[in-house]
Length: 274
Image (cartoon, rainbow, N blue to C red; front, side, top):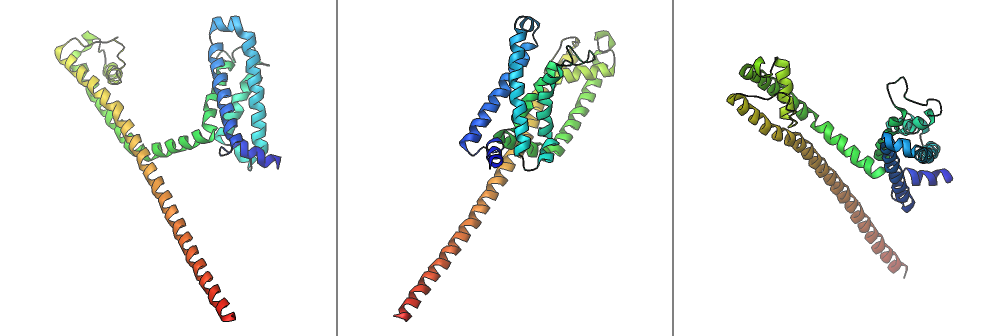
């Protein structure tokens, strides 16, 4: 009884208790991530390191209890523990416990505190966001062939334009190799433009302008592809829902017909008795 009630609150979202739990969990995730960001600042860490650490432990204990309750209330415990979200849940609480054994960075390569930012991925565990994330996965999976073709096309354009700039500008203007020129075309195409290498010839500047204009179009294309897949999936979902509702209406109408026939039959039986 307790287990099923917990499952309804933790994994569900239709009940008021489930909605409140999701809101509290979302707030805890966002606040804890914000505290990690604050703690990464040297000045803030030196001044408020101790209270921030106390708050960190409060959130870690909260997430630990929640993780244990998820395992306890889950129908398939092993499946949850080894699922992507289960692993993220575990990894989001481990870093704080590791600070008990490691005072500083592990092997001078990674700061344990930064690992706490894994918690941000826990947002997708909340049911409404999980459903939206699943829709995003379907849309990306459906649009993958088109995006791959688009990336190949852009790669070809970048190589051609980079090579062309190398020929037009040459080594004297900073385009020392084809590889450097391709790097420049990528930077210009993505509208970043570091300014470390600048074309000086009229033709080079013209090509540069064309690449910049092409860059804006490049941003729009993949967005359009994914948006189209989103709309297509939503349309199919609505169509399926419509078909289900139509079938349900057919079943209801048949049930009504049967009830009417039974009612008329009952009347006839009553007349015969009289």
